[in-house]
Structures are given as structure tokens and as C-alpha cells.
Image (cartoon, rainbow, N blue to C red; front, side, top):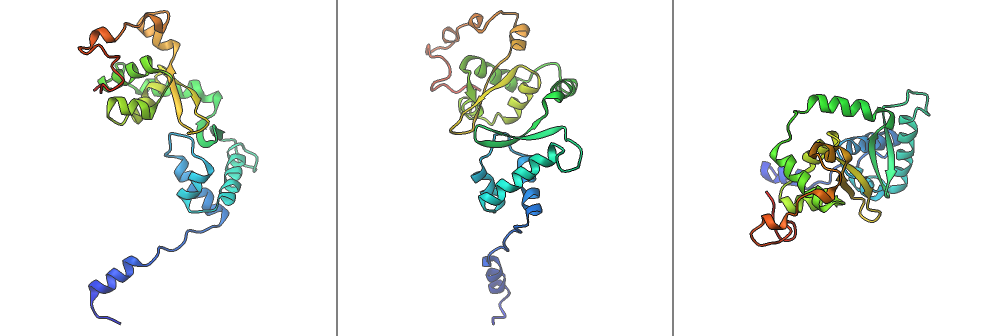
Length: 208
């Protein structure tokens, strides 16, 4: 036994953290916490690693959450749902509430898009279908919040989910065409004449 407080603190710091509870209710609560903050569908393996529980237990907990949100356990049906898309799980607004949520978000959003939103929208318009990580690589900045804003404004939409990576691919909507006053994306100006090197502005060229 040592009287050195620093040695005692170091020994305490190296002790393993207590294992997380494997009670089904506790696993479900941890899963909800993770699902509330993710933007991309998460596989069962990724969720199991995040909450520190075996995959079978996570699968059982996810089934329970689905039933709970759908009102199959005696409670009310929630305004959101838990869906498996492209091999991953994510929370979604129920389809019948899409218009309500869009109206609310549009009412809260400013009428003009920020410069960051305009630049991100341009990348998606020219490169679609494109994932958020690809847009972020082109712009050299995080675009998560900007993409959410553009989706909420109805200017871009989720086209499909990559079956291998679970990444969502985005594209523009008819609302963008209306706002631009064009009939199709073919009417967008060619970007290469606007660049000094004649490139397309996306391969090897960082747009800021």
C-alpha cells in the first residue's frame, strides 16, 4: 500500500471501467441515445460496438423499439419511426408528417441561403448523385448541417442508400429547377469555362 496520492490516482485511472448493463431496457435506452444523433443509417454491428452490447441483444432491442414506436406495445404510435435502410438503422419522420415538418422548418429558416449552402448546393447539382462525405471532400469543410438545411428547404433529396457503405446519395429536386427558372439540369451553365485551368471544378479543385 502506498501513501503517494499520485500513484493512487494513477492506479485508479488504469482500472477498467465497469461493464455496461446488459439489461434489455438499458440497451434500448443507449441505442436511442445513439440513434438520436446519427445522420447515416448504422449497421447492427456498429450499433453494438457503440453501446457495448452483443449483436443479438442489440437486434432484439431494435425490434422492441420498432414495436414501441409503431404502437404495438400498448402505447401511442410515435410521429417518428425506426427503419432499416440499406443494411443500416436510422430514425425517420413518419411519411404522413413530412409536409408538417417541411412547413415548420421553412417557417424557421431564413428566406435566403447562406454562401456555404449555395456552394454545397452547386456541388450537389453538378455531381449528383453524391454523398455528404464526397461533398465535404470537395469543399474541404463539414457539410452535415448545410445538407440538412437544403433537405429541409426541399432543394435536395435522398436518392438512394449505398447497399455496401450505407451512405446516402443526394440529388436536387424539381423545386430547385423552379427556383432557378429552368426546365432541367441540362440548362445549368458549363462550369469549366469559368475556371482558369479548364477543369470541371470538382476533381482536384477545392471549392470554398
